[in-house]
Every structure is written in C-alpha cells, then in structure tokens.
Amino acid sequence: MQRKKTERHMRQKGKVVVVNDKMQRGYRYLLVEPIGRNFDPEFKPELTPKKMLALGVFGGKYMTDCRREFPASWFTRAKVSPSGKNKALNYFGVDASKPLSVWRRNGWLHDNDPRGWFQWYCRYLCVPKLSSGLTR
Image 1 (tube, helix red, strand yellow):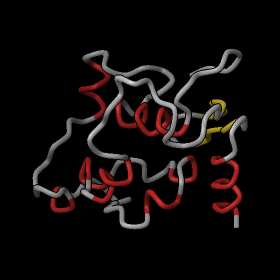
Image 2: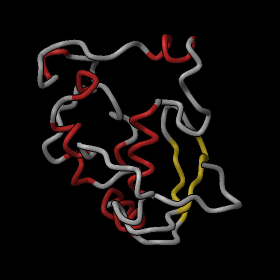
Image 3: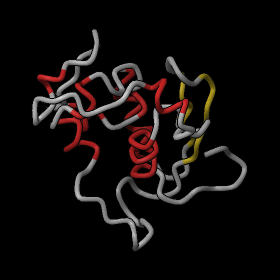
Image 4: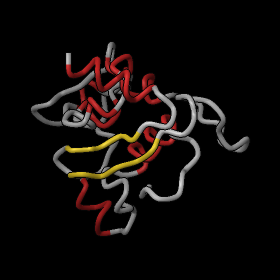
C-alpha cells in the first residue's frame, strides 16, 4: 500500500518527493513536469532507466534501497541483487562498474546525487526542470 501511495505521489506534477534511504535523509525535490517529458532538446538518451535496470546495470546492486523513490514499473523486469553485486546479472556478463569509493576519490559525485550519474538520470527523468527553493 505504501509503495502505491508513493508512486501516485511521484507522478503528480508539483509534488515534493522526500528521500529517506541509506545515502540520503530528508532530501527533497519537486516534481515540476510529467515523468519523461519536456526535457532539454539536446538530452537524447538511448536507454531509459527501466531498460537499463532490466539489463542488469551495475550487477543488480544499484538502487536496491531506494526503489520507492521511482515508479514501480521500472523494477518489474529489473535484474536486482540486494545481497551484493552479481556480474552474471549484467546483460554482457561482466563487471561494468567501479566501487563507490573510486567515484568519491575522483570527485565524480554530487551531494544531491550521491549514487552518481545514474541516480541523476533517474531523477532527471522524473523532474526535468528544476524549481527554486528546493535543492536538486
């Protein structure tokens, strides 16, 4: 029931999303556009987060504790491994990611998206335009 309520909340333009997971507590952002619409015209990704999750990105370990932030449909066919990274879940059967420590050491992370570019991408897909007054 809680998941359905969160999903409905996520889809409503103008709603505040409050994130409480292992890496962020009380982080908030505002949904200002319908999910997947009104992007910058130069933003033309080849794969959606839903497709990437179905291909087993990051060995299935990515986003296992923050699923409620995003639409449940993204996880319907997702290959996930809450117990740890599993390269067999990756579409190509390889370990195609670096540990978070490498990302931190190289300065590739932003405080708003502590999981990296994929988290940014997922949130951008949900909230293409940023509003003032809330961090993002």
